[in-house]
Structures are given as structure tokens and as C-alpha cells.
Image (cartoon, rainbow, N blue to C red; front, side):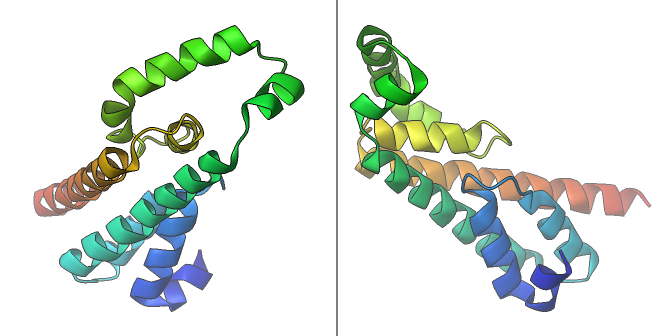
Length: 149
């Protein structure tokens, strides 16, 4: 954590990026820490959102590299089940993109969106909207709590 703090906004960007990959990491702690340290909320919003969004885009890209045969072979999932999941993801993919910010499962969604080849021209901007709303909410809640004390 101290590593990211010593690099300021770049550390926030990097930490937020890593938090949106398959690495178990929380960008909320970094965002809150930056705000407590007196960082500019607009810059915190911009760097965290951009880093986290690009992390999700890279996870989406990893999903694009996946092959159906790997899922069948390594995870012992039938082709029929995978095709059923693919139809569901294709049907709701754009809306699922809005919730890739969710802790824990958001990274799996981003990976699945890439694996099932959800339209990137819709999916990636929706990911950005979801990430932006996430950090706006965190910053708003921080300001609300600070104003109470």
C-alpha cells in the first residue's frame, strides 16, 4: 500500500488498474487513502476511473484469448452449457458491462465478456460508465461522512 501512496496519482492509477485485473486487490482503500491525505477529488476520480477501466479492458482482452476447448478440457464444462452461457451473456452483455466494478465478481464478468466476444464498441464504454459511477459514489460517500464530523 505504501508503494502506491508514494507515487501519488500515478500510484492510484496503477493500483486501480491492478485492482481491475484478476489480482485480488482493492482500489477503494487507495481512493479513500488519497482523499484522507488531502488529494484533489477530481484527480482522484479521474486517475482511479481511468486506471480501473483500463484494467477491466485488459481483462476483457485476456478473455478474447480464451478458447472454448480449454473450458471443456480443463474445467470439464459441456459444450451445451457453454453455449447456453454464451447466449445469456450475448443477450445481457451490455448491461453486465455496467457492473464489472463489483468487487470479486466484476473481474470474472469482464473476462467472460471478452471470452464470449460481446461487442467491444458497446461493452467497453459501458464499463467506463460503471467505473465512473463507482468512484463518484465512493467520493460522494467520503465527502458525506467527512461533513458529518
